[in-house]
Image 1 (cartoon, rainbow, N blue to C red):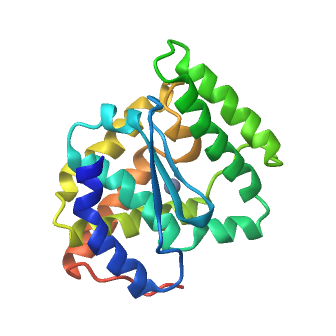
Image 2 (cartoon, protein in one colour):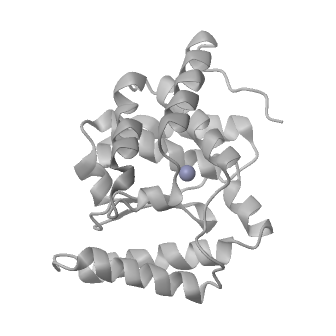
Length: 209
Ligand SMILES: [Zn+2]
């Protein structure tokens, strides 16, 4: 995790400041949770579970996950969700989920313990159902992730493997990232379009609507 983050962080930081619309001071948390999940919350919080690294085939894929969550922060998606009154639950789920993961590490029931902590967290946060970013926000986070990876000289084709893995595991119940992130052919198709555009523009940011 550390080395994936080190590769993308300086270009990600520059991109965020270039965009100048979101949160660019990030607090990274690596959780011991073995489910394949990652997320972004208030105050620049970005968490990536150990499960992401375990599922990843190479470091470039881990870079994609970090870059995607940074994309949510850089585009100010958390504040937007707050305006939609959804973030209370998101933050509750993330914080208690992370605490549960730490407490239950090495327990054979770690994923259940964490899941129920997550559910409790979501309830405490005033959840109305499951919290997620909009499809547009997910697309934008992926686009920004691709810009970050391009500018970091991360192999975009290798990183894409993470999206393929997600699409393949969409039937599995223990892949937490699928609860909060879209998967499947749509996501892969937009990723491929974004990468083609970014390569053609040599890493330029698109104009934001
Ligand atoms: Zn996302």
